[in-house]
Length: 311
Image 1 (cartoon, helix red, strand yellow):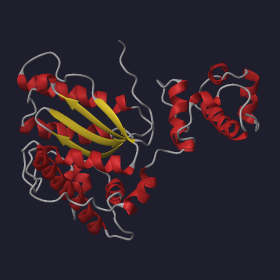
Image 2 (cartoon, helix red, strand yellow):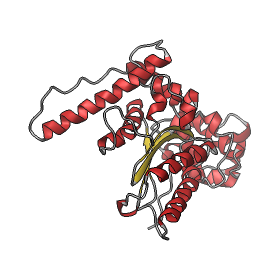
Image 3 (cartoon, helix red, strand yellow):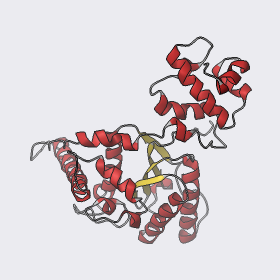
Image 4 (cartoon, helix red, strand yellow):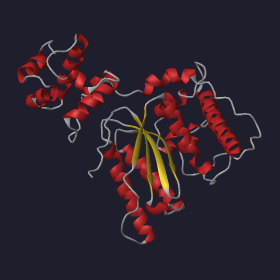
């Protein structure tokens, strides 16, 4: 079976995970520190934006916002260096991770919040830290009041936008937003305890009320995928036309199916969107014949669409 092609959705937030082979606890404290430094350095070399991370004894979590570069251009160099560090320290050759890293896109504000909270609570759930979440190998402290995001490889403007997702009212100060973030983690910890108690048949307290983060939902637009105009400005060399068009549809026509844009007879709205897709593909180096075959229209129509208002 061939390897699954990674998604290409510029601007989308992804929760990425990688686990060691046989779940071996190869990431000792020294290696965890090295891996954290690698995460900072390797993500900074790309146009991705780091949102959160946690390095555990046998796996790691990374939450990032994809830029124009493919996920593989971020993760493959990082995981190669992680593998080399493990092999050198433990003196062996062979596989370090059990399988290629997993990716899951965060398509809603709640999903993004959950990915960040899940990542930062990983050490607590594994019993590696107390309720203060004092664990040296996560980015949790970057989001606390007075936190220095750059110390954790996170851009200040990214910290600001992430914290806005936890807002329950408008016009909060940075420290107030950080307190809302901390309150969300504390709520999740109480919810976990309640669930464990309920599963054991001895709940000791009522379930905690879910915090209201309606204002945070409204702030989601600041973390939405890139617009069609920004995506089309730089084509990924290894990206095929199908994935290129799909990446544009994420924001330009959410929920649309590729088949809606194929064939000569389409509604005015579909024709207008397809016109922009054709122009974007042409500007990014895709050939007229390739575009025509993809949309099941004539090359002449593609040529006209590139320069005129026809779809």
